[in-house]
Amino acid sequence: MSDDDFTRLVEAEQRVEPRDWMPDGYRRTLIRQIAQHAHSEIIGMQPEANWISRAPSLRRKAILLAKVQDEAGHGLYLYAATETLGADRADLTQKLVEGRQKYSSIFNYPTLNFADVGVIGWLVDGAAICNQVPLCRTSYGPYARAMIRICKEESFHQRQGYELLMTMMRGTDEQRRMVQDSVNRWWWPSLMMFGPSDAESSNTAQSMAWRIKRHTNDELRQKFVDMSVPQAEALGVTLPDPSLRWNPERGHHDFGEIDWDEFWRVVNGDGPCNRQRVEHRRKAHEDGAWVREAATAYAAKSASVEEVA
Amino acid sequence: MSFDNAYDAITDASDDKHWAFGTGFDDPLSGVDRAVPAGVSTADLTAYCLMLADDALVLSQRLTEWCSRAPELEEDVALANIALDLLGQARLLLTRAGEVEGRGRDEDALAYLRDEHEFRNVRLVEIDCGPGPGGDFAVTIARLLVFSTWRLAVFERLVASKDPVLAAIAAKGVKELAYHRDHAAQWTLRLAGGTEFSRERMVAGMARVWPLYDELFTTHEVERSLPDVAVPPSDVRAEVDEVLDQVFTAAALDRPDVAPMSAVAGKSGRDGVHTEAMGFLLAEMQHLARSLPGAKW
Ligand SMILES: [Fe+2]
Ligand SMILES: [Fe+2]
Image 1: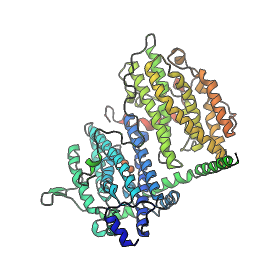
Image 2 (image 1 turned 90 degrees about the horizontal axis):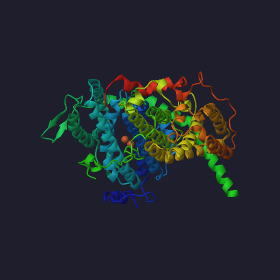
Image 3 (image 1 turned 180 degrees about the vertical axis):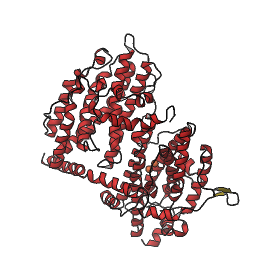
Image 4 (image 1 turned 45 degrees about the vertical axis):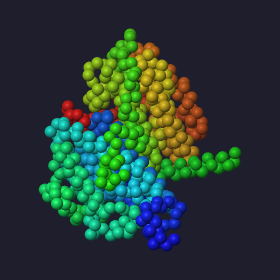
């Protein structure tokens, strides 16, 4: 099969499965994209885990703990999907902790009050859903199937987050202040989750042809803004963008320009928490090395005992 | 799945089964008779429910410290699962305590608004066993093994309690605790039989928690005054010893030879007398809830 045959195959919406032939570039691009997604799930545990010990009710504590646990599960399915392409989880983790592979920049912002837990559910899981729902039809089978399960869970996270914010907005002045403060901090970084504008995005065309990506960054970002505006109104919070208004001609909301300097600064390692997040992951990974070694050694001994017996 | 309706396509408002690993939010005790059985002291029953609740709540709080810090992703998921089970047990027991007490305190009032001396958990659950400086994965596993073996033995008897609510909570808890014990036992074998280093850690881990072992079996006045309702922990000592000895034998470990941690003027966890670690744990857990009195979350 040639590269052109392959492109025709995926253009006809045929699913690619692990044992099928695929171009090296397709394989590499997928491994990079899925690994980056897996890393995001795992790094994304940190900002929310930050509030588990202090959750202000036992019900919220249980919801938050279950959510963070789900994210670990998402990381597991996605690393498993990379392994069907010949990648190795330990190797990908090594690349993450050495800063050689990226994860979603959104997690390089701090969680500073409990409303952040709700706003992350609403906006961050919400933006993730916008990005990921189209991936449920992505050309690579194991990735598409993982995304279906993940999207269902993300949508539940989104509703839980929104419900927390609703409860807080119906509460005390201080709770409402927390929610607005949190929205002010997370709105722009959430818009940045869709990546550089189409004009700046280098990988888009090839990925669209391969059906690894199905919509451009700007299309998805617009979708997210259009969905979030009425949700913000229902909540009673102000989105921190004076240019945000409905444009009847376009049938979409116009919105202000993203601070691209900040975007690239955070992508390139200088956000408020980049070092902290990677260091946290590196420490957990290194502190756990002796445990993983013990498990491997034990399994090897048990296997050889069985052989003898 | 339509792109135009990204949320609608995946959101089914009536379907709460989207959690990967479950949270047990639905009421597992629906249909259970909640009246206090005749002849049972409400003060004693309240205190007993708090003892069992606080053990679970405080250990759950400790276990969540591992979240995002476990040696493997699979273990992150497993420890969160165990913490969620214990949190679920704590919530049911606190709710029962509040309703038996009859002063209008719900699970949150009891978890967040009691002071240290009102917490009745055994001291084993409150000490730092890692990932903080007080321990590591082996200490965590050692505590989990001892705790879940003990609590499982208690709950297996509590299933026959005269209080139908306690009996139902125990019936649900037995399955969970059996899994926790098995998980801890498997890791004990792996660490003890893995590398030389992991074996040293496992031996040290068991020695770290062992001073708090005896306290688990000291029957408290409250337990004594609730015949057929409470399980006197002295009743389960022989069984717990035996189960742990089996694990020790399989792992080729010796039972630690360390002196018990003494009580303070004869009082310990069940009396509300704790270790220095407890105040910090509660400060962190309760701070936000207390800083906005009356707020709903
Ligand atoms: Fe996720
Ligand atoms: Fe999520």
